[in-house]
Image 1 (cartoon, rainbow, N blue to C red):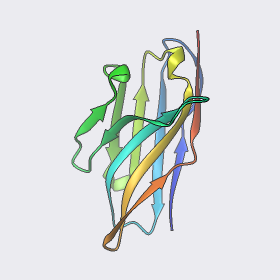
Image 2 (cartoon, rainbow, N blue to C red; image 1 turned 135 degrees about the vertical axis):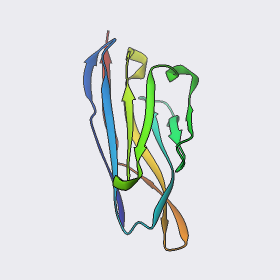
Image 3 (cartoon, rainbow, N blue to C red; image 1 turned 90 degrees about the vertical axis):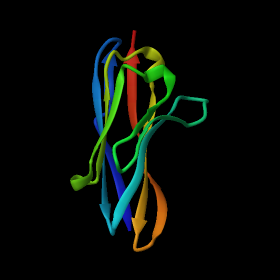
Image 4 (cartoon, one colour; image 1 turned 180 degrees about the horizontal axis):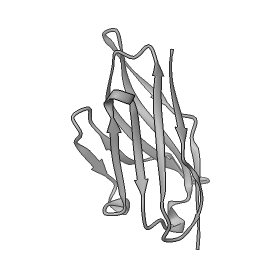
Length: 119
């Protein structure tokens, strides 16, 4: 069994910063791609940023230059540093990981953490 546990959400004013963490635990042989998604009320869940096991990153245009995704492979943890936050960044943020268990890859999701940015 694999679990992803997120932390670091909260409420900030526009221009502020937050750092999200997502730690994977359980029967993990390895983790391939990891990513952060967000879902605003009444909208679909969308990719925010992703990172490969080798450290290559990808960002949605709206967060480029403001958000930074990183990971610590030794800790099976992915981070999302969010700076210059805007009210439109308000959403529930979910981490996603492609976890290798023995020789099969499975996709796991975290429980979500609320980020609220006030103007």
